[in-house]
Image (tube, rainbow, N blue to C red; front, side, top):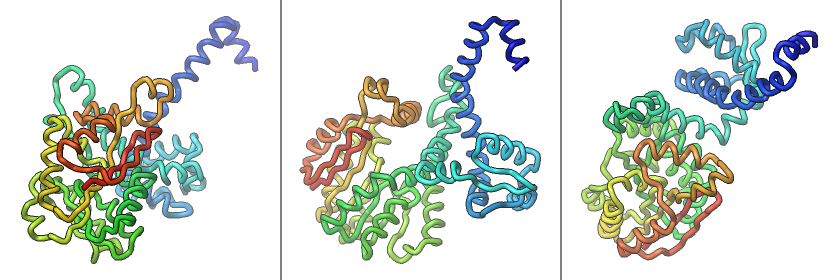
Length: 345
């Protein structure tokens, strides 16, 4: 109390109160950066999952097992302990309920944001025109796949899996499959379903195959490196495909013009004539709406704008489907979360 009175004597009550209030206002912004950086480091090295997997872990053993610097690890854990995310006692660390909650459904938000860490690391260069995306800086593809897969389990996957089930799909071709998270979900929701995942990123496909080998779906799913704009050979090989899915995939190419997506959809219809096309896509939310209620889509739009990914309104998706001579068989657009789902013939 005496210290507080001394500060007030030196600064005056009004200034002391103002300084405290403004630092309290700034703290969440600074802390968010520090917390994310610490969690990302633990996530990348595998230390985070080791902590989550056990009731408690000996810090020395964790450092040795993951080849981590003991001092840096202790510094990170001490910081997270102060925030109530972990507890460090007696040389051991344990995950507290708050951390376990953050690494449940919201985990994908942390992983997807980490995928853009290289972009933010070069943000000054991008802003000054000294660097260009993707020539000079790229996202972390592995964490794009992991983060997107985690986030999509909350709504996109359940909606599309329900559509597949109700329309009787048996053989699914998933475009831009990432780590196969959607096909895993779809096969869990509909036993007997089979799937082929294609992605044009070699490291992502390699990671998908690692995940597949350790999963119970190895006999029902396969992962292939392929360009979804050139699937004629695959179409001849697999005429049994009756569903072509794309979850948050097409928008990554819209910067090249809507005609590119229209042509792709038209080709898919010609190459897989027996298949329905299932589309789950972001639908742009008005900036005025985000200003009134700044949800996580504000960050989402920023990530996409910085990496030349175009998000459009639901009306633009409908126009592209019509231009490709496709009929909307079923549609669900959730304006509150900026996402739409379409079944096309």
